[in-house]
Length: 450
Image 1: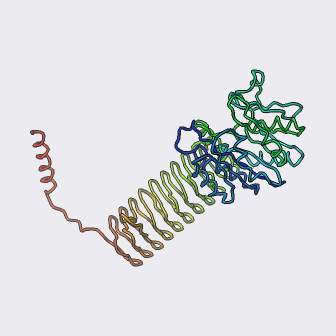
Image 2 (image 1 turned 180 degrees about the horizontal axis):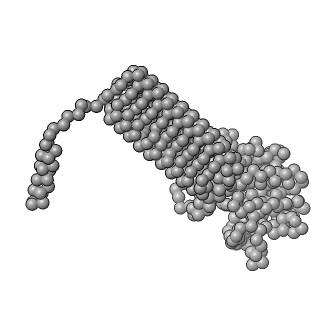
Image 3 (image 1 turned 90 degrees about the horizontal axis):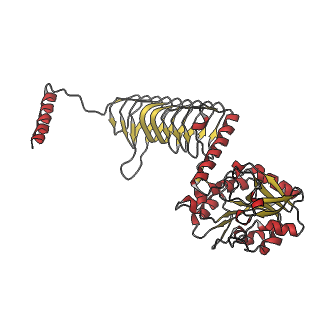
């Protein structure tokens, strides 16, 4: 494939989003939409140039985070797509190969579409326009074609009534041979209803020059442009459907696919079973044979082979479950290593901890890891048993095979195989409860009398 420069237009303000956040930073699958586009073109080893708007430092930061070598230019005045491309002139002026122009708000554009564009250019096309057929074409530019070639793109506001009946619409994604873009870009004018410099006018200029302009059709769902909250939801829904399909084809069982939500980087091995209403945030790896039970939330965590999570469990970043570990209902794990075969079955918080193999953590146990200023670590050795409602006040360690009695508050290290009791001795005072209740009742009645 010929060398490819990708110019990503990201200068739009996205006023229809009604948000203080630029539209291209809204996430789909846990990743900003602009980052989806960058990741897609990165797969081609393409040089990347991104055009951002004024005061869009956050957009620039999102791009350079995943593509440090990307060239960034600014469109200080939003005078149209043709004008936006001109801002990337330092990148395209000497580009030796093909040039792809695409938009930062189309997160679902596929590598297959880009491959087809590049293939057509390699085969002799001077330009390749990506078209699609939406259910309602209102507002979209139309592709005007003759003999299988594009002769013009007419913006909706400038189209005649006859042209508006055309169902083939412009996605905005255009591939150019480098010399073709350089031959037409400076000749685009703004003589149109909006007074803007449309990149789409490059088609008519190139056609008049006798250049060959091909088009390809892509699925409308792939070309969703996220410019309002409705489109954002549509893009998210389409992304999730694609991810679910991919995982099931790879051998993952989804009991209720539509209720499971993935992130862009979720990794799940074969023979994993996922029950309904599970949400995966970014940074999750699930190993073979694990079961994720219903209503669990997992983010930034690693779940080992044949482990079990949930129902109603929360795994936060840096939770790492060993093989066969069990995390039960209403358990939260954060920044903790849970050893092979360990059980944390219910109503428990384990944070900033190392829990050894085959440890049993009883109901209601917590690691007290925060002193108001700093976090501290708890270490529990292999085979230890932590009784229900114990509090392990970090920094503290419990040795292998030790037993912590239920209800204990452990503030000192426990040696291996020891029994630790950190609770007051029970004292019963006959009749005292009756006296306390009577006094409380009297006080309540006194208040009513007043």
